[in-house]
Length: 163
Image 1 (cartoon, rainbow, N blue to C red):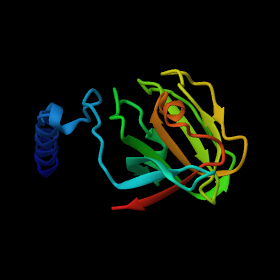
Image 2: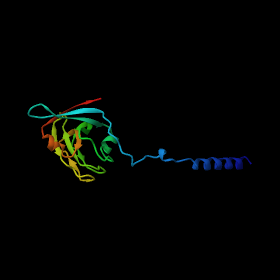
Image 3: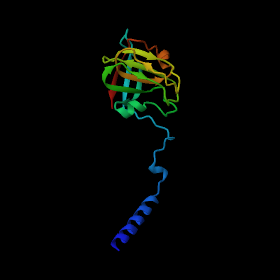
Image 4: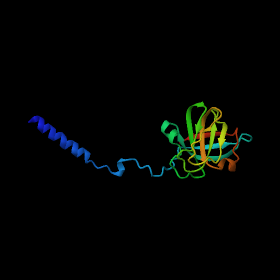
């Protein structure tokens, strides 16, 4: 009799568990826009004059999840915004545009924060690797076309400050 009562009790518990409300708030909403969160500022400095040619509000990607996700699943970014990827070491890197909805300029900087490679006006959703060519420790993503408009060149440097 104890065994039958135990089985009936377990059946009741399991049936109540399976009726649990699974509202949308419990599951991730993959269609919700990811919003920009300012975590610092970054200056781009001209190699020949040491003058600041642009200042950006930046989000900082400095852990595995953030560096893997980057600007994916966003529809746009303001002109004065960017994402700075900060890696623990300097090595050859490669980025691509998978799940990125808008064109970017991707700028690779070495451990001294000097621009060593850049890709302008990247193609949204393209999964072709865009390699750094030289070891890099920092990667800046800004809106496509800004590098040319601002006159950014290999050899320019960055300085950034976290908030």
